[in-house]
Picture 1 (cartoon, rainbow, N blue to C red):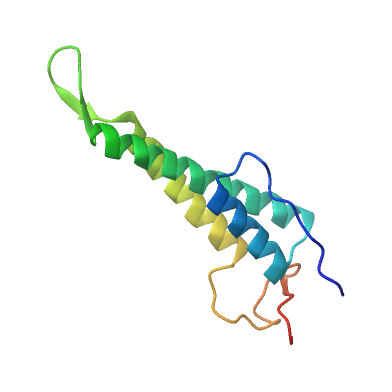
Picture 2: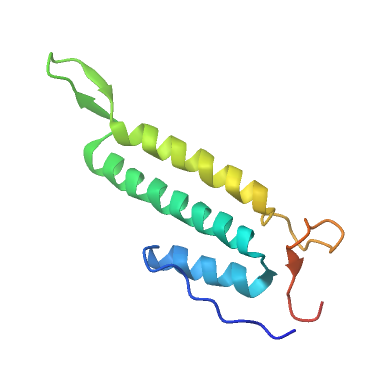
Length: 114
């Protein structure tokens, strides 16, 4: 079966889009897996955006009464990390050299030589 060339969604960061394409090259994804992959990439990008804000502003911010509270981006980063980890687990892409039997249906390996 010839490999199809897939174009990553345009709103993804460059490195994330490259990973999206790499996953499509290595796995034969069904349409619903592609949607999960896209959501995982969006979560990864959102996490990176939040991390940049935290690096720039620090993990806490001052309140109007002079106290401190967690920077809002801390919750965004945490939620995006959790979403990415869960979506990655759902896709089962983090296993090393999966066998066809170990893969969920639809995630058949497309690696050369298999």
